[in-house]
Image (cartoon, rainbow, N blue to C red; front, top):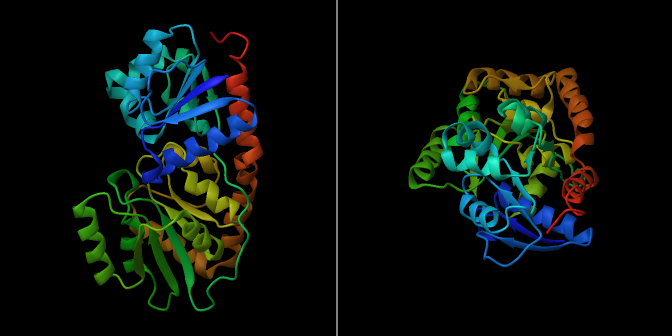
Length: 319
């Protein structure tokens, strides 16, 4: 099939949407499909459109739905889609009505959809290949935060948590990700000056992110809104336990009974969990055990199979 794969962010952004689009294009090409990845649909004929983000990709979705109303349209919901836009934005809501299939990136995503929409929805967990472990720093307990500095990520929660760690703690928090505004950059510089355990590295290549992950003891994801974070997949692929804000997108990735949750915005509880992970081997082992179980859902072969199956449902009926 000829597939138009629409992503609202191009290669230069190197964010989660772009990584998903790049990976999905590869999976579909390996299955024999012809895939064009575009930020906005150029109008060329396609047998199927696969669009990431209902609101941001709406112009492409509308163009395809109006020109080819019987050809399959698949819309994938991201975090801001799932937990904000589809509840209040008319364009995002219309995109779901036009869609022949909807994809969510974790099991709790179905909870946000009306029954008629949930009935045409598939869950496809994102994935990452195994990441070989490297020796951890001998004189520090390395904690990573990965993600651009923007409000949905609550990016300074781990920084604030370092102020509540015991004085003797060896925890060092490294944040990898660019500031998406001047205000965020200024806040990061100020936090780094006042909180000596927190280090902001800014924008770094993806291979550098993976290198840090391979040596980390722990990763923190503190988001207030998340559709199904790819950094969780990568942490589990590297055998790195995760501490996560207890919001639906993270629970859908890590499971209801995961022991590493803290309330959204609660840096004191996060600090307590970080200290437990550093000082209580049984707690760290429990986190790691749960992480290994969830890792089975997030392997590349699983993601590729589910994506190809979602597309294959339409191969006999495509126009």
